[in-house]
Image 1 (cartoon, rainbow, N blue to C red):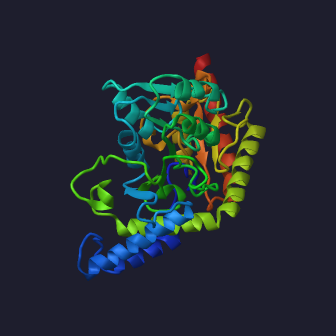
Image 2: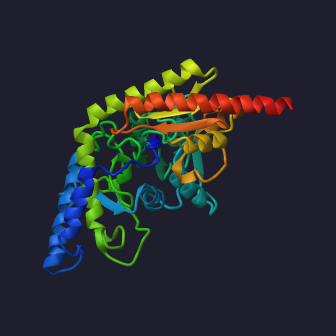
Length: 389
């Protein structure tokens, strides 16, 4: 299989698997237990959290410092931010291209009467800063929370976080950043990003599935959404997954150590795919090409061919890709991201996403170009014949 769905999840790095195996083999792992085994588990957990914080430029070691709240993944962390930061009755502001775990959480609150303001994006997928200023700084009442992602999960477009953070700072509004797609792929320094909280998920950078975190700025209060224990200073009940936290720390360290090399490799693969297909397929559309993008993401439309049909054909041919967010991939609904960008219906209906990782190779990309071209030509010819008949 040629795996080109790394925005959905990445393969577990062998070094990470080894780190978790050593942790699991070290004994019982309940860091809340007061006996020796529990204290040993707590020590491993504290070391992992400290390392993650340092790698992200956060101070999680000081008693009154930043807080790294472990969650089951990016979805839970995003929900914790939306439901737990700021006045729960105050207006929410988010962009029109947020991940479903942000958008659905916000809409669930809007259904209960909480004001919701949505910032539009332009045709490249960039947040409209003029509209953002109006919705954040000029409308009353002031927002209780603003949530804008760092990099889009479908197009890879990088958002102008600096300008958004400045707007929030001017009016004293907390900013939450879903950084799930950016962490580990591009430099990210929490100390330099003026955000109240950021979300990350280990399986996006070759760590384990089932663990993520909400990194919260010192002094920002978070209301828990899971009760039943006083773990994590009462911010999130439940026994902490020590081995998964160790795996996340190992994966993040490896991702940052190899970041420059990986960024160059994935950018070369992305450009190679887009150029190769562009030379062979008339009408191919690259979404977000005019904006800064993650080096690892390509969102392409194959006009004249249904995205689900193309996806299944490529799957049978040994290529794994997706037709949008993995959290919505079981749905046949068109991409809300592309719709928000004003993409024509024919392009939305034929869009597929390709994601690369440090394990992607040029040889795989060349093979993928051949396979994709062949199946696109077959399906487009079939559609022409069906129309004639």
